[in-house]
Length: 91
Image (cartoon, rainbow, N blue to C red; front, top):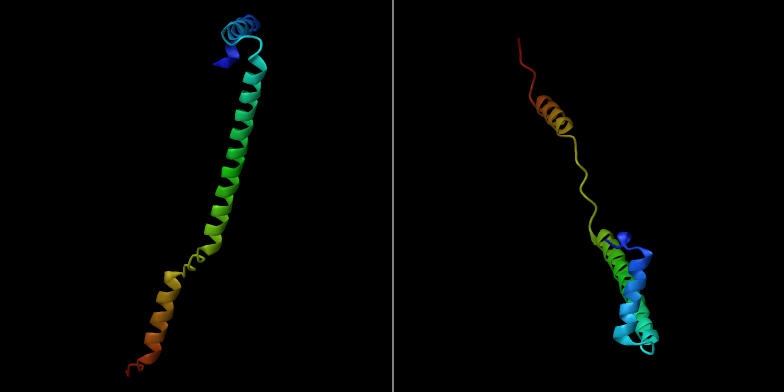
């Protein structure tokens, strides 16, 4: 959107701003805009830091996921235990 603004468009905007606010108010306007941008950047940085801390705390507080055991190994082990408990058939 702003990439298509040329040099003449920027000069025209500056002239309009000078007419509306006057030359005396222009430094105050620039100072206010600078403070607003600085405050916005500071709040974004703080929000990122708070979010990172919250994620770290959530990962630290959460218990580790339970280990997934191989169900086929459990089935084989159960079958071997049951076979060992039964007496051998007589022929």
